[in-house]
Image (cartoon, rainbow, N blue to C red; front, side, top):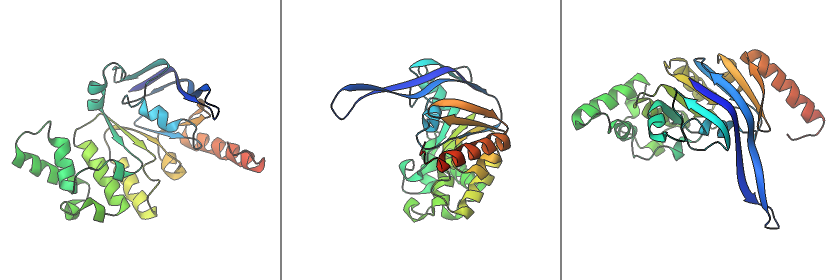
Length: 242
C-alpha cells in the first residue's frame, strides 16, 4: 500500500536575472493506493513522475508524508527500495549490463550467492517473460519492447511488493505496447503507472489525474479519462497549452 498525505514538493532555482525562485511541483496531494493496478495520468509537466519518484525516495517531500508498506522512503530508503521496483521510461537508462542474462543476474546477486544457481534462476526469469531467445544477445541489439521487458524482468528478480512504471510505453510501437501491457496484467505485485497511454490507463483499477501539481480527479479509469479528455479538448480549443 502507498499512502500520500498532504504531500507537497517544491524546488528552489533561479530566474533569468539570477533571482532565487521557488517552484511548486506537487501541492497537497492526498491519496491512499490499495488497488492492484493504479494509473496516474495528466499533461506533460503536471507532476506525475515526481509523484512516482516519492515512492522509492528518488525525491523527497517538502511537506506531508509518504508511507510505502508502512515505511517512510525519506527515512528508510534502502528498506523501501527492497519493496519497490522502478521501471523507467527509457530502458537504455536502466540497463547497464551487456546482455539480458547478465542484467538479471546482477539483480539477483544480493539474494543468490551461488553463481550457478544465480544463472539458472536468471534464465528461468527470462523464460517466464518470453526472453529466452535473447538471453545472451547484446541489449543494444534488442527491440525497444524487448529492452523494456528485460528492465521489468530485472526489477521483478528482486521480488518487490510494488512496481512503479514511469511512462513505460512511450518509446514502444503498438505491438510492444501490447506485449508490455500483457506483462503488467500478469503481475502479482501492486502496479502504479504514470502514462499518456490512455488505453493502458483504462485497463487499470483506478486512475488519478494530476494537473499543475494538484490531484484533481480520482476514481474509475473510464470516468477519470473521459473528464481528462474533455478538459484537454477545452484547453486545446482555447489555445491553452496547459
